[in-house]
Image (cartoon, rainbow, N blue to C red; front, side, top):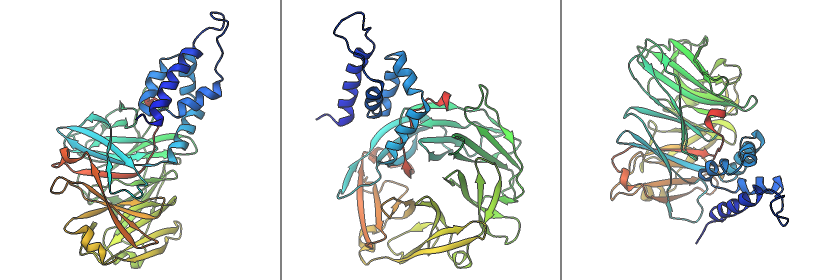
Length: 402
């Protein structure tokens, strides 16, 4: 049975033939209204878009329009996806499932594409439909690559020129200026970030890194993916100034300025926090142990940022897990993925479990209910670490025209 998108693709080809015919060649030919063409293109799967660019000059011009890109992303936000990524044999594989999985115990992962990468590659994002692929260390340089899981496109970026061998990179998007920026920070000793560089995508024919100033002395104790919310990149870092503890560093993508948000005293009594997007606001999930959640975990907390300037947080909820929790989680070791738009905390393991099954766990904040969904199609990656990310949307814009 054909899906709606497959029917849309067939209709698009039919309309393409009719819209490219000259009205003078056949008295019965009709001109297809542009609004109708746009509506059909919006219903296409992203991988069909490159073929449509070749259908006619009119279609190509429509697909390059900024308003078409915004419409496509807006519609995609109504059906966000959970992006799965894993590295196998120096290739990055990308899959997705619907983020809002209701009344289903089993879901099949939708394969998107794969990209070449290194074993030590770090996957950043997704941010507005794109991911950034980089390396934790590559001697004196690191070369990030921007990838679009939906279209299969990739765009190699210039090397980060530095004397350091340790690079931490973040991807951000400025919703006002409609620009993607990559922030890279280098260090040699895990004690202090020495250099801060920014690259803006698509601003000039030859993109280049710019050094920027950061007045906050901080460092990284572990791999940090960060999170971008409303034009601000947030990441956890160790501070070399009072209060001399872990804090949350904010990088404003538009102004390229840094500042620190301290955790509340009660938050500091808990372990490392996992930063999440909670209804468009920065949130933090905390557990009794470290970042792991097991069947023995009794509770965890969700804190929400109220005022960044005053370092004010609100304990949104302190969760006492139901008795069923231990039975469902069993011996699995889980990690927080985030909070969905339906107020469900999403958790997952890092590896496929025996007998080669991969599960995603959903805890409903309102009902205090826990459920487990099996993701089929991941058994071939049983020896690979699998990373999940919420709120992935589809973007069809050409990377060279970002």
